[in-house]
Amino acid sequence: MTTDLDQLRTDLLGSIEAAAGLDAVEAVRVQALGKQGVVTGLLKTLGGMSPEARQVEGPRIHALREAVTEALAARKAGLEKAALDARLASETIDMTLPVDGVPAGSVHPVSQVMDELAEIFADLGFAVATGPEIEDDWHNFTALNIPETHPARAMHDTFYFPREEDGSQKYLLRTHTSPVQIRTMVQDKPPIRIIAPGRVYRSDSDATHTPMFHQIEGLVIDKGITLGHLKWTLETFLKAFFERDDIVLRLRPSYFPFTEPSAEVDVGFTWQNGKRVIGGDPRKSDNGGWMEVLGSGMVHRKVIESCGLDPNEWQGFAFGTGVDRLAMLKYGMDDLRAFFDGDLRWLRHYGFSALDIPTLSGGVGA
Ligand code: DAH
Image 1 (cartoon, protein in one colour):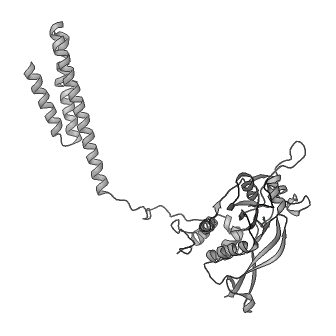
Image 2: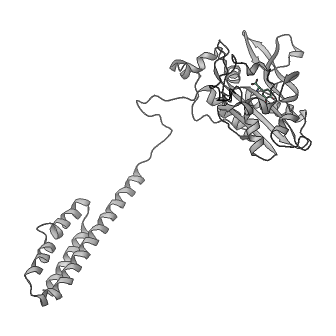
Image 3: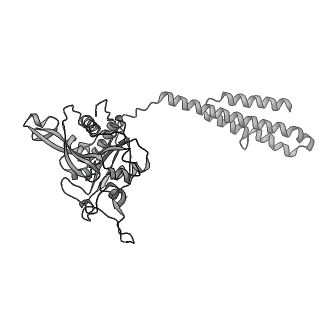
């Protein structure tokens, strides 16, 4: 019996070791441990043995079963790993190839422009901040020093949520991205350098106005910030965005409740084939003019105070503009409504590849 069991063990482990594939491993398993298997047969003989014989043979037969089970599992895992390694070595996937039969999507110009802006401002040290589209009256108006009588607060300009029980109108769809200025100053300690791109809502609809559109806000709060910093930042940004060195800015005195002084920023454009093309100095040629692109100014003391900061210690500048409008100026669309129609022909024509990653130093779309 001793020799038989040892011989059997050597034979079985040898065949497992020699099994060249998973089928062969399975065949040895059936031969040893299947219903009619040799080891199964040996286990059955235990029932007919005397208690003394069983005490000697039992552990030996169980040990044999265990050794065979383990060897089978090890051989199986080894073969599976070898098969996977072979596949990994032979198969390569080029993730950049178009997938057959699946139409390639494209990046919407609004998303593209937001990415371009985030890249350009990231290179200038600005972080991206966000805020809720359902905003409250305090963040959207009051903290920004927007008086009760301001037209932006009128029912016909703003989408309000139903009145509160006390009759006040607390919640609304934000009418601009400026409340993100407030949220950032309340939450973060200066120095602050952020841009805030996002959706905004106004009760307005024609070829150049849609009830939902996109803005981008900029905010810098630090010590000793001047209009000079504002102008340099905007000039650097506009040159990078429009990919032209001959961008000329004009800061025109204006009024926004949350900045003092306030300036509207115009850029020079040149007429080319009946279209306005950004760039060139309108003071030096008759073939062009000024186009307003941004609102801006030095952050009003009252706004800084509203956020719990000391305006004698902290100053800064802010700016805001329409993302859709920037996209139209750069890429030449003329009807804003088409941006949100979801017309595939328009999207294919104006869409961008997901692989066009813009940078300030590399040149956008380079
Ligand atoms: N919030 C203004 C609007 O929607 C745009 C704006 C103007 C933002 C001047 C600013 C700013 O940050 O300084 O018309």
